[in-house]
Amino acid sequence: MYQRQETPQAVYIHIPFCTNKCHYCDFNSFVLKGQPVMDYLDALEREMEQTVAAVPPGEIETIFVGGGTPTVLLPDQMESFLKRVKTYFPNPSPNIEFSMEANPGTTDLEKLQAMKEGGVNRISFGVQSFDNALLEGIGRIHNTDDVYRSLENARKVGFTNLSIDLMFGLPKQTVAIMNDTIDKALALNLPHYSIYSLKVEENTLFHTLYQKNQLPLPEEDEELNMFLLIMDRLKQAGYSQYEISNFAKPGFESRHNSMYWLNRSYYGMGAGAHGYTYGNRHINIKGVQPYIDATREGLPILEKYEISEQDAMEDFMMVGLRLLRGVDRADFSKQFGRELETVFGSELNKLLGLQLLESTDIGYRLSSQGVLLGNEVFGEFLSE
Image (cartoon, rainbow, N blue to C red):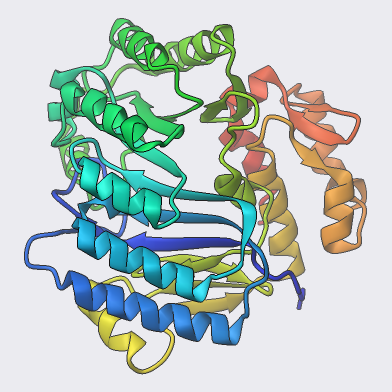
């Protein structure tokens, strides 16, 4: 078995509560009403304590609190949660990136202050669109006024590293609506934008509607034109597309997500969270109460498995090629002690021949056509 001895420098923590469930969402999240929030935070503390006892942390470079909607925590709950994080990960890097996901309309000044004082220094707002009819159609509870107010409050408290998520390929969305959303997004002059295409996932309202042929999705060509527009507009505005769905001003790339794309180790804590330490991947128990109960007996792990060297090398290629700079053969050699071309020579040559990849001084990256056909490229590296 492939053994990896890298001490994780990244931490993911999952807060599974939401004000409501969006129509497209298949994340491990639960409507907040009636949930045992403080019991859950106590359980998280137990998991943190046991995790760092088993795999002691080094200098932590990134922490990411996702969900769900972490910002549904009340200010005193937020303060309590962040104190616990600081207790178990007390030696962060001096330039740590500490991100938290937020929904517009769930962040007042008091809560933002608690986040700032607790060490959070980057916020990613789930905006999705600047068209109120579209927002209602996908089940979001906020409107565009909430977006402006939330960003204004965040800046008031002193946050400068701000990002928003947008979506394209939504039901009834057109290229013109997308263009208007980009106008409004760029007017905010934020350092980072994440822009994802809608995927209709099982166990969502959208999947049910799709099965009944009642989901008015844009045509494929229309969706492709939205993506081309997004890439062109962001580039013209001075943003670098450093990953298929992510755009940043220099120095504001998401360092936490880059840990995943570079196939680095990370702690994963909370209900349904995934972690990757010492060559092992694990998934936690998903339900809120089952997770809480499990932490009283030990680590709340649902499934744990060793990653073979072959799987790890395939993962390296599939996540690494999402980055527009591509994969680095020296990094591959450092992780696996083998030459990239020796392992994947035939796949690389095929994709170079199809002009979906291009070679660089350090390795390989997606061509402009490869960016549009990413899934086809990644699939080439999966063994049968």
